[in-house]
Amino acid sequence: MADFYDYARIWTTLIERHGGTHHGYFMPREKPEGAAVSFPGAGGDGAGDIAVALFTFPDEAAYLLYRDKVAEDADGIAANARFSKNPPFSSYDRTFLQPLSGD
Image (cartoon, rainbow, N blue to C red):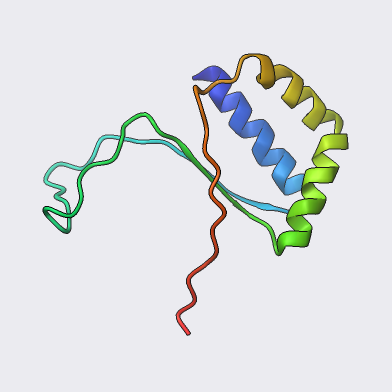
């Protein structure tokens, strides 16, 4: 867990340094007593071993610029060297999302 916390801290800093907004890393926790699924039969409790990181950039161009900049950033290079050989997670998935407009 200590390595995962380091990983999260470093990447939060890098994303914000290069134009993004990091909304945090989220990990499962105990569900509140008495919490029930809102739609019985259509859903259930999620996995207890998945963490989620949420971050945004103003637009796609800013995201692509971040990718270029972090590859040249000394802290980004060090983080990739540190975590690529022994990542603090067993796998990861990326999903690109967009906000749902109320309009």
